[in-house]
Image 1 (cartoon, rainbow, N blue to C red):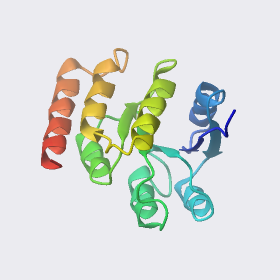
Image 2: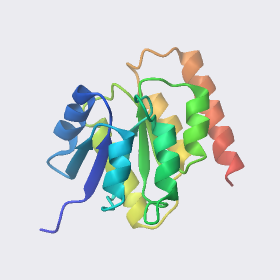
Image 3: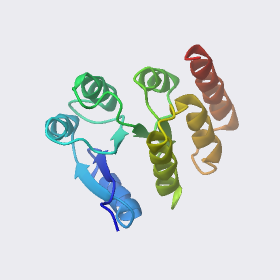
Image 4: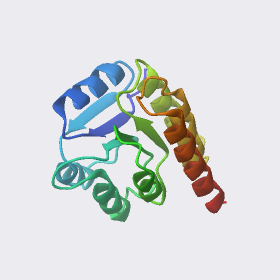
Length: 168
C-alpha cells in the first residue's frame, strides 16, 4: 500500500479540526493547524496534496491566508477546499478568484467531506482543472440542513454560475 495523501486542515476552531481529523483519518494523513500564519510556515517546508481552509479565522482569515498561499513557490496549484459556516456571496467571489476547488458549508454531513475531498483529489490527479463554481453549487444544494433559506441558496448558486462563466 502506498503513502497516504496528505491534507492540511487549517481552522482556528479545535472542534472543527477534530471533526475533520475524525472524518478523514482513515483515508488520508491529516495535518491539523490552528491558524493561517502557522499554515504558511508549514507550507514553506511541505507541499500537501490538498488544503482544507476555514474562511473565518482570527488574526489572518482564510482569504488572506489563501492569497499568501498562492504566492508561495510550490503552492500555486494545490487544490483548496474552503470551509465556512457563512454562505456570504462576497466570500465565495473572493475565494473563487483565488482558484479554489470547492466550497463546503459547515457543519457538513457525515462522509460528505471525505467524498468531496476524494473528488477534488481525483480531479487534481487527472490534471483536470477543478470547476470551483459548479462544485460550490453542488455543495450548497446538498446542504439540506444548512439552515439557509432556499432563496439564499439559489442566489448563491446563481453567483457561483456567474463566476464559472467568467472563467471560461
